Length: 455
Image 1 (cartoon, rainbow, N blue to C red):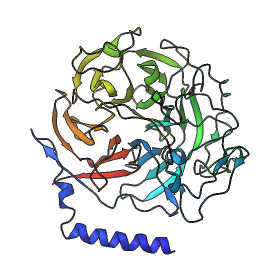
Image 2 (spheres, one colour; image 1 turned 45 degrees about the vertical axis):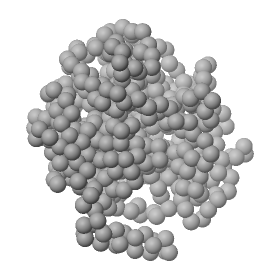
Image 3 (tube, helix red, strand yellow; image 1 turned 135 degrees about the vertical axis):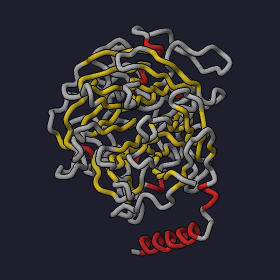
């Protein structure tokens, strides 16, 4: 009760500051030109969780469904600082240990559903004995039938000499068995707690008995958390031309016209398409629409010619006109294709952006973190022509506004920082039917924000 009272008092004080003008500098962080829209932050969005011990971890995906509900996926306790997860049982060699705190805190359910006002509606997800939850989640999508898709993006290899969790080395452990359809997700509404996974549905859990197979799959759930389909097999990676395996897929997009899912298969440096019901292979392509994998791209050099191969494919989105937009994150570029994979055009965003991999260590997040590049995620504006792209640029700590026809930047909003309207590592972006923009932050950011059109 004391923690709730402190939060309430802080909220009232902050609201008074905003109402008296202290929040005006946030709205002035938009830079717009050539008819680009302006945006201002909604400082107190979303509402507090019903359980005030819950906190959000590193946010890897944000999307909006046909009901105008906002869906968020985050990386749970593994992405929290030590003092942020004191209520979660500490991992020991013999399984879950004793929590270090009875006051604060533990990760919220790793898949979160909000309404547009910011009210928490539902949550599910986390380790299960019947399907392989990602070691590190990637993007999230909700299809036209209300099903929720989550990419298993995998662990970032730690830099040389770095500490912490990197991608599992080859040879990989034996792949997990394919789960039966109709398996409830851990923490799902109506699902029993999974004791093998700590019984917390992603909000705690025992240390695994053996290293998990590396992420190489995409999961499909009902909106209530019932497991429906897995595409790919954890630990099984048969190369860039495989029709049945993936390698650290970062994002998913759904095409309602053809009932297909487009996967940003980052580890294989390609886009691959599957039937959304059966998970059967349809087609794939590489950078510039090539049908065969090219030579590895190598480290990014802003003064060198553009690579003929993708470096890291971190997003895929489908516009109303059928054009497919792909983020090549550390190459600082967006490539555009038709649905068959025919290359249409590309645009370079903040060409001189570099970055690198940050090693975990100490009491911080246990994930290595790749901060390279300017094109982390994209979303379309809500006008009928979808004239603008919103580009999440985590390295430069802003959301860029790009003309969709020319792929030229026409504005931006946000700066680096922790105040509302600022960013630390904005990794995900989405828009709703009213033109609002939602963002999610990774690494130490660990939050979701809402921006509304206007000055």
